[in-house]
Length: 449
Image 1 (cartoon, helix red, strand yellow):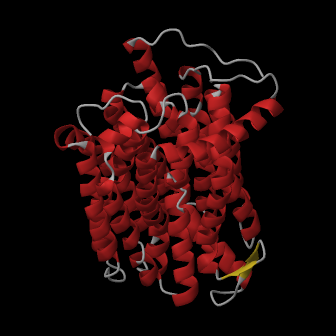
Image 2 (image 1 turned 60 degrees about the horizontal axis):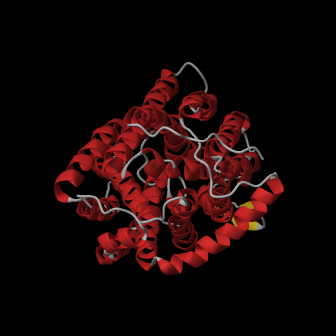
């Protein structure tokens, strides 16, 4: 395997150029998050599974499981995250071991984009095709995100990471929101069949992802890894061995581990609320697709400002305090969601507004904090563990939803069950001694944390 490009210049100008290129990948893959995960795919695959089951009271089979149609999509999310738990740490170890982060990110990005384009062919009762394409797309999405996030501590110094991370997340909301606006116009135009409009919208996310991923591929630069193997097989085997050492090494960083557990819990809640929102709105609140898309579209553009706002609040009050404050709002939002009335579009928009204010900031600032508590030179390995519960990867949350829907057959019980993720995550984050965790990882403690 050829050695990656060696980076000799780390001037402020070169870092800013990489910042701008790095932002564009969030613009590119946020279309998958918004158009596919948040708005269209959950309700659409639920409808396709319902057709295949012969009605809502029937069942569909997938990987030996007999599932209610309404539980099919949440089960797919759970399975995809189980696959990510296996694959993402290997991807992270391989990226650090070889130093070929950009190439690995590009391969996975275009694999995910191709699978997303394939949603165009999911129609009628083809729930199995939709399920397999989603597994491939979401696993590739998570793997590409591992390497994307791991660039942050390499392109941004400790004191500027809150700002760079927040700007990247905000830029992603603009990109995802712009494509969603186009898809909203298509869906509401009435000129084509509703199912065809959904399929075109899903496929458009794959095309968007593929086109705009070109920019970070041109601007980001690989750094040399701590080892270079001559063959792919040796690189993979060496990466697997290094992964084992990384997991064992977590015992040396107990506060990093505690932060990671806190993040995995509260962000599982965040991701599950995002992915479940349109399904909840359609099947429990009986709101039309135009209302759902309108609310999600509003979230995208309000979240742009929200991510920047929480970044400013972090500078003034501290990053940890700002994240804790956002978790209080998340807890209130989920509790209030249980009481929303059927057909009450204004209530749905109001709760979506509060989600938008804290959505991007919670995730961007958490990513910035995590980058400070991991050892230098092993960013992708540690971000692979972090990425288990990043965009589209809510394992515990989707599992809790699936169980709640299977046992109670109630969307309201399912949504309120997510409160526990925010409460426990809040408590664990309060306990973490961040300055000590940063020093133990061998990093400089910034002025505001």
